[in-house]
Amino acid sequence: MGKPKTPPAYGGQALIEGVMFGGKKDTVTAIRRKDDTIEYFHVPREEHPVRQKLKKIPLIRGIVALIESAGNGSKHLTFASDRYDVMPGEEDEQQGEEETSKLVMVLGVAAVGVLTFLFSKFVFTLVPVFLAELFQSIAPGKTAQIMLESFFKLVLLLTYIGLISMTPLIKRVFQYHGAEHKVINNYENHMEMTVENVQSQSRLHYRCGSSFILFTVIVGMLIYFLVPTDPLWLRVVNRILLIPVVLGVSFEVLQLTNAVRNVPVLRYLGYPGLWLQLLTTKEPDDKQVEVAIASFEKLLEVEQYGVSALNPEVAVEKEAVDEQKPVTILS
Image 1 (tube, one colour):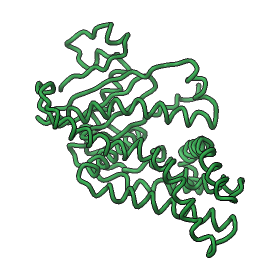
Image 2 (cartoon, one colour):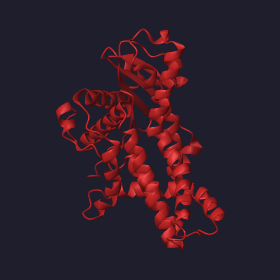
Image 3 (cartoon, helix red, strand yellow):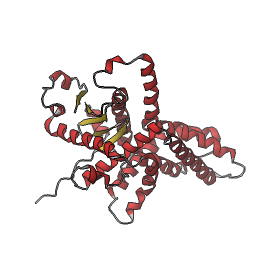
Image 4 (cartoon, helix red, strand yellow):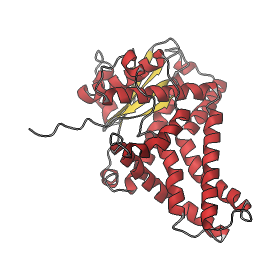
């Protein structure tokens, strides 16, 4: 008998009043509309030969995955923010002022995901350098400066996440983030996909992007020991140039901690990332879990039956598939 097939690894993203799940070839979002119905949004993953080859190369694959995730996630984020608070049929009646207000919301939520990461890597990478430099007389030397720099970076990151988590909108997004993790954990534990079962799962997961962000702080600190810190201008330059290296290595560390999460002792390697998720996820309510389950189950249907699974009663135009247009359906 051959070895049992390893179940595919699914990823997700929390949105405004919804959750997106992605597989190897498809991504599906489910959101809760204003009339309490659930609407789906599907975008197939674009396959590029060069990109597929790059995703097989250690250190480089993490950067490719990040760029791909950012581009794909923005489509789902835009869909969710445009429709979650609008009654079905009234989508085209948006006023300019309302659209402007909604754009502000989109930017706010995007900051939690993609922009949180990018902002932390460019701004949070440089600000701690200058803060540590201010304490040069108290903490001189390369080791002390790098430790102090990493400390400031961590404090800034935790403070930023803590502050935005206090806003009602972001708090709900964090609840959907928790629902996303619970669904994935439920699936990986081979349990029936019910609200009760999903709610019994942990809201933390080893593959979470939050863990990735924290690992960039830890990995960055270790890598910085390999390059000079003086003079200040050289320190700033090498911090910027090393961003891709830090990203690539951090992705590999994230993959490693996920691979050994069931191994005694080694499982603790992923704990720092899980601790950060205590801030970036919140316990969801049953209705939020329902949306997450609907999104995941619809993705499985699309993978098995094709895009027509979004609406079995209506044939999907070939043009929509060929041009990779999003398809939506109310349920």
